[in-house]
Length: 198
Image (cartoon, rainbow, N blue to C red; front, side, top):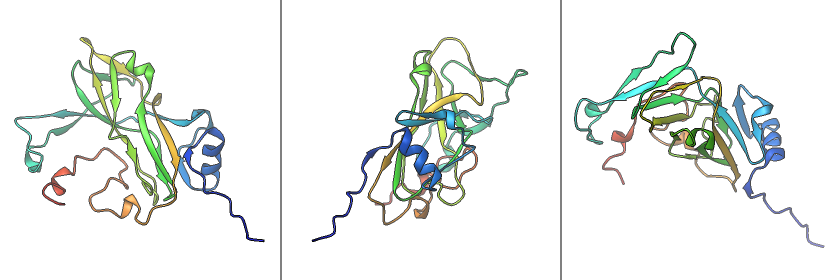
């Protein structure tokens, strides 16, 4: 009788599978708070650093010297991050993430922030192998669409990481050139390294 092998798991990881992936090392989250595991995602919190994107002229994506400056933003006396109307802020997650080659992720802001006129966006995709060596932060782009400043609180939930089981990848994200897989803080764009390449 032929040996029947179990079908490889596919699809979105639910809370039970997220906790199992964390236990067996396929997913690393530092620091890990079990209370942030949701039915089909794990929430991530806002870190304490933040940088405003400031331009001095036209940005040419092929010319790094024209890129916006990352200006550090200080927290106020009560430890809050002030985001001005129309301001674009880059901020890291509090957690460092690591995925095995068997997991991929999607990051999205929460509806709580969207209902306040605050966009929390990212490229969205977290590739297999991201942060697999020592973990890495995810950099979030935060935009205030209101006419008045918004005060954000570092350490509070700001986005969700949805995880997907994959069949594995031949090359991990961390092995690709000019990646962000070892970032422990916000890093400037590396797009200029890719412009003109096939």
